[in-house]
Length: 74
Image 1 (cartoon, rainbow, N blue to C red):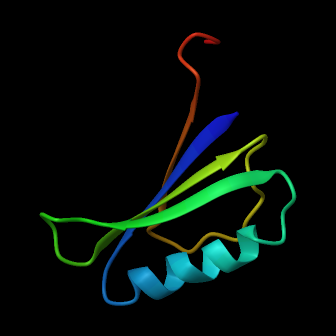
Image 2: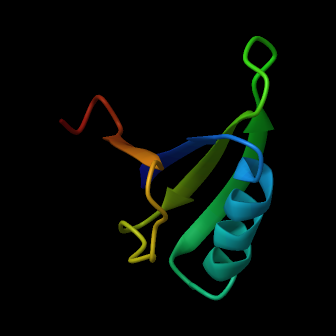
């Protein structure tokens, strides 16, 4: 299982990531999703996705993505 982090900040960051979250619901290889908001930086959101493969999504400009896997497998 892999973990993907989608980070976005700004006025509509929450809405954009919620839209991505909705798109992910349609993918059967996505196991888990979780939207977080920063305690330290206003308007910063992080969508955490656990999936068997990297979702092929149409991503907005300014969105940062990190991809991780189990450290024992690397």
